[in-house]
Image (cartoon, rainbow, N blue to C red):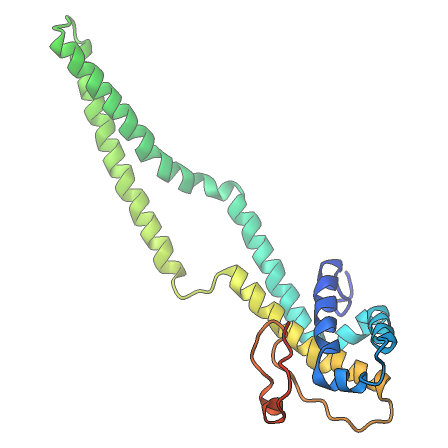
Length: 221
């Protein structure tokens, strides 16, 4: 089993995005102000990417939670795409097919009656048409009741995609505050007493409350 503290390949892009936010925070920008060529920022970026797993371990708890929520959402998606969707599909299609067939039989039987066709065929078609119409009505009511039941059962439960996105943002925030910012400042200013103030989530436009009085820039794109 893979080490849960190690970044999955699909999460490397998130790590790089949070690293980009970290390099753009006021603390880092101020410290790099004396390097207009940008060599210091490039060095910090390369060093952080080379030690991505070590940095990510500082946010191991939220990352474990994110992976667990993501796995559960993927299992649920596979279940919904499996054979379990056959019955709901039949519940929706049955009244449609039965209604269409009933209309066709009733129309055909009625036309035969108007044409004074001999034999039991016209009456049989009309009877079959009314039977299918009854089937369409009953199955339609059953399908509607099933849809209402599903909607009521799921009301108030956040969609799996929302849960995954929330866990992802929590992990990214912890990765920024506990992993990347301390790492960057430690390697940029090894003897500095610069304090690290937790930032707002990297995907929001909300300024950092603790820095608002200093007129700092939000930690967002």
